[in-house]
Image (tube, rainbow, N blue to C red; front, side, top):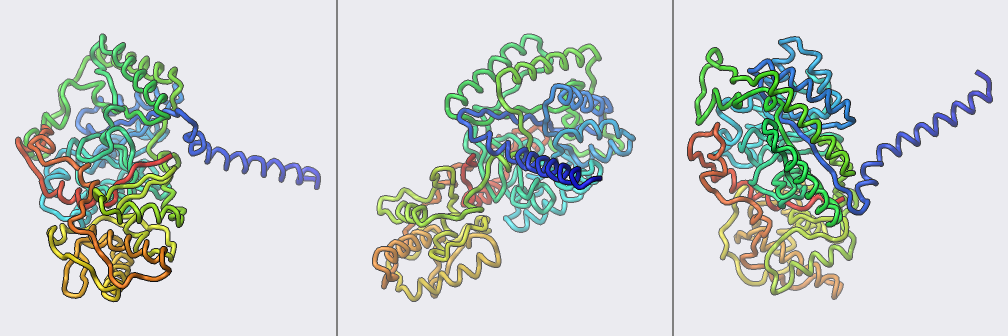
Length: 504
């Protein structure tokens, strides 16, 4: 190659590298455009009993590929192993053109996640989730040849905050961002993606969740109308996300595979598992035709289809990258220190959102200006409200702050209780004391002689966690009738320290 050719080749290489870098940032840049509406289309790929589901999964993936739409297929560990045993590389290769997520190891075989987490706390619950679900996640990664799974989502209503906190440890962290995609009402911001337990979460999406009944011909037009209305509303509100989900098995079965075998706590031995009754080829073909028209209609709306692994490039947690400016710390401190403060909530400033845990960490380090590392919430309920009252000498308060810094540096979570000498203090009340001390330091240049802490300060984000009701877990047909798991929701409220909106 001549010198001139070498120079030309080098210039073209630079151009191509620049274009590649530009492509990587396109999603994040485009998402800032006013009125951008994204659609996340995801499929719980779970039926490992009906062989026709293999073909339905392949047909669905190929249809979407032909239409230029990438979706997220959340695959059950046993489904991946069955595809491997059946030699269905064709199915695996078709699905691999889309995002591959994870949907538990055995889905509905008892105990389900909520059943085995029912009496767990935060830390032992995380360990149990990793022990039971980690092998399935490893199998899905191996069989589909992916380094990281695009996301995780629970089977049925079998939810727990411990699973979200442990996502990074089972490989569900695309581009280093733990990601959770599913549907339910255990916690959420009513139609808006959010951060929780250090993960980016798409959950509790009504009124921005929609779908139509595949096997009812008359359902298509109302389904198209519904998604149109959501897109128009979101565009008028400055943008947002629409969540649409199905199961490949819905195209081919008459009854869900797990209801046939594991309904209301049933757990037959494997040799007695039954495949669900199947639809006719004509019914399946008609459902695929309707769904194709549905996707074509959504494309015509000018929305953007996104996958789970792309979410971290759209919703960037700038607090982790940039920390907080002095003005932002001052605003946080003033909100907390106000005598009429209603409690501790997440705070949104521009394109940043600060969870209560972020605010706790920012005030703890104060002028050291450390970016929050992303603490988990406490691992316990802590002392009851109505405890310590009054002012604390600065020397004692400063010593407690040093102890808390040591704790969070090692444990990576908000402490459930804080000691000031022999007195035990709630972290909510201590946090208000840190805010008041910080403001005094900024005002006078000196730390106060005494610190007035908060008293019975409420963690307002905990109100976003559902109340314990018979239907919140027991409503899923796989769980025993009336199954309840109040401790799961209690742990979820502790983790509400980490809740905040996801910002573009």
